Image (cartoon, rainbow, N blue to C red; front, side, top):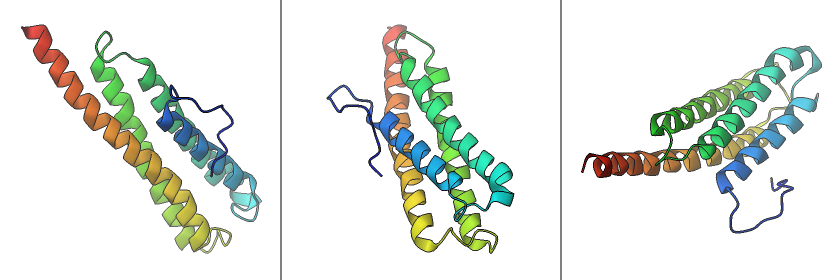
Length: 144
């Protein structure tokens, strides 16, 4: 999508940018009455936006928790929450694709939207796995 408005530098939190891109795509899709008809905007649109908000919020909050000085369990829990929301969003997109109530959610739109969700999910899963290993190493170091 590439609608990341922040200037790029080496200190960017790439996953945060990808989550923001997902939020922007979701907002664009939910605002388009050809994608989500007006009669479903409140229910479906609100649910999709809440998921996008939850993903961004959990990722941003987890990033603010220092793995070594703060509670690593909380950071890992927030990462898991973002992963859960990604899976929920993927299922909702799939259900909209299968439903006749959302004729604007065609195979191309669903694939593009799902790709954004999967990108965030895979990046978050990698981050979670690395943090699990780092947290285990921190615990071993503090026991010594």
